Amino acid sequence: MSQLQRGFTLPEVLLALLLMTMTLCLLLRSQLMITQGFSWQWQQREQWQALRQRLQGPLAESGRIELQRRPVAQGCQLYLATTHWQQKEMRLKQLICTHVTP
Figure 1 (cartoon, one colour):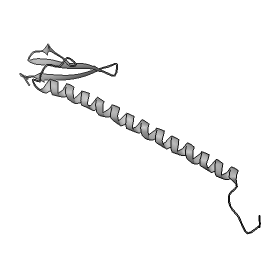
Figure 2 (cartoon, rainbow, N blue to C red):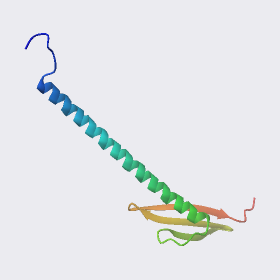
Figure 3 (cartoon, rainbow, N blue to C red):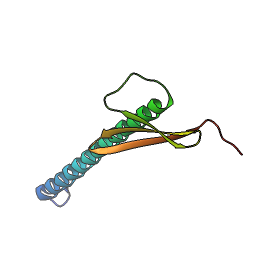
Figure 4 (spheres, rainbow, N blue to C red):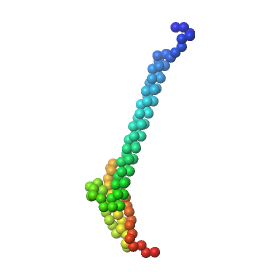
């Protein structure tokens, strides 16, 4: 081989391919984790919205959301909507007072 011909050796090319493959795998894995995290957050947001809607108005009864009403003070009611999601309990509370005296 003459001195004018220069290029990469086979071990250098293989090492470069290995590094490129590892980098691509890490990027794809991080993309998957980001997508899963976004999906989880979206589902959690939907659960909070369902709880809020259940507190705000009469909806069809849902087996997943339990609604309780408790009197807490004169003229006030505490509404509590509860559901379970991803092995966690989610609660949303709303205090409604109809007769408030200054």
